[in-house]
Length: 182
Length: 179
Image (cartoon, rainbow over all chains, first blue to last red; front, side, top):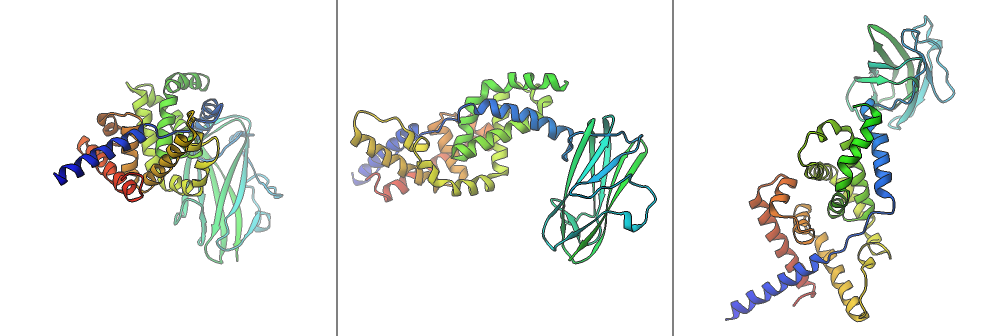
């Protein structure tokens, strides 16, 4: 009889809990959220689909010679041009402090299926790619100017050159960046 | 499909499911900000998979599964944010406080307090148990739908539901909500 009372009480409690759960509240999405989410998805989805890395516009075609800039006050003239070490742009880094280096690519026409290879010296890593000395992207580049941010992290007090090599249709250009970490 | 055609095609496929998807996002994430985050992530991911989406028979179920997998993949992020935002559930206009009242203020207060206790009890369940009990008992999903969404056997859905209810009963009885 006592067991039956306990069972009855449990059934009643379960019923009450289920009733409560039916009423468990939910906050509606904020006003206009669906439209904003849709617009952002179209924008962001297109961007992600086109490029795994951030490219926003492209200036001069590879065939005509890509021009690369290092943003932040530094200016890099035609890559691959014969030059001494003094002509290579440099950046000083502090150990384990991420430093973003922005590369700007420019071309007159859009390019599909370009390949970008980033090679790193010892002690320097690209954020998100731990332990990798060489990272390769397949990407299509749109007409206009394109920005590629590379977030570098220095793990040892060394230095060397970061190479960014862009290839398309058996043509290529290599961008060199001197890195010193302390 | 070119870029100009993609957006309207995408919208035609996904918009009819927005309300149900948002409800699912809210039940998974637990707060409006996180639910909107999850919903947004789903749309961005789905937009990139539009070529797959147009071929599926039931886009709503497909989108729900993608959302659930996104939640599982990123649950640490959502849980962390939920912890930071826990007090926001009780801000006026959001969460339990936003419940419509009745003509009986005493009853409203009691109901509010009981729902707060339920809220706290649900927070003590594992994600797997909480999601199952909320989808089944609150949103009215069938066992079969939960099985498809979560990718677990129906028997596991049943046992999780049973355990979740038992745990809620235990917590709420211990806390004095029920005698």
